[in-house]
Image 1 (spheres, rainbow, N blue to C red):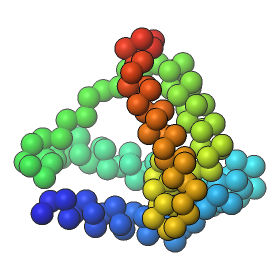
Image 2: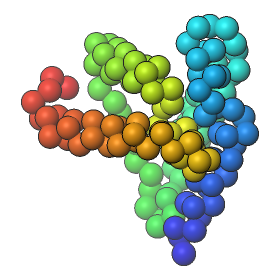
Image 3: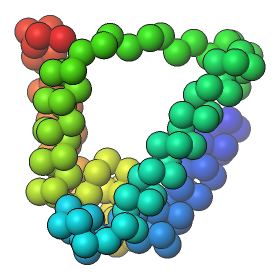
Image 4: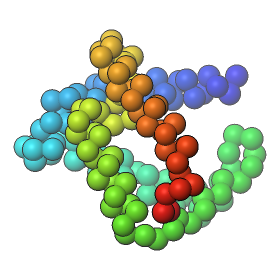
Length: 137
């Protein structure tokens, strides 16, 4: 029954992504050419909302659906790892025309060539899982 909540939230997220054109390749292309504020506004809003919600979780010591306290461990501070990861993520985003959330929205909306990109993302995650112990984290 709890999975129904995730299904409803995911469906709502997909509808919002599609209707706001955040999954539109043309909007993403405009963003990377610095021709439109549309995507920067969506990403900035998500960033601000995420920061506020994380602070709320930490300060109110909120619990998950099972009643366990939500623990958010501190991240290692490192400029190079986040810069390198961000560059790889951005290049993949620019080449594919979609980041992970919109990839599934596009598949759900009937843009089936995105399934090739999803397969590539899954394969890349699998390869990372194989070599992560050998990488300089």
